[in-house]
Length: 176
Image 1: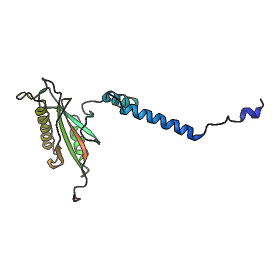
Image 2: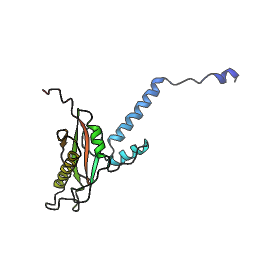
Image 3: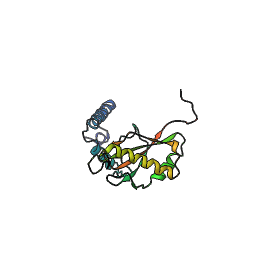
Image 4: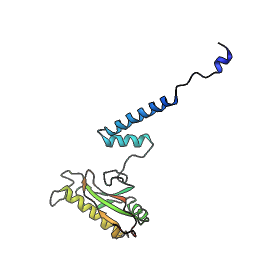
């Protein structure tokens, strides 16, 4: 073996082979994500893998919008529609509503346990609706325009009212 043989690069594989292998790995990864049974754990793992912060009461992701742009939350005591946590909620609302094409969508929720249900009726759905209405009242009392807020279907899972920024389009444009 001569010195010139050492300097010559070995024959390379064709570029299409590398591209095909990359595509196959991406496809396998996609199917793993689609078939994940515990989506909350998957989301937590992806968030941590990319250096994100763990979900808290103000960064909870629930299925509020098909594509939620941003969200904040109001927290509640068990079995109550009295707001106890509003960390950053007003700032989020005011900043979101600077764009005239945006409305706030509020979805109340309850844990669905006996301890976290409406004291009169025992219904978690009624308590969730009361939490959404309490959040709307709180926002209006703090200067948010009532015509820029809408209440969504209540849910279960946590003691919060999730406030989501929703793109609703240009208010001056006529709809067909």
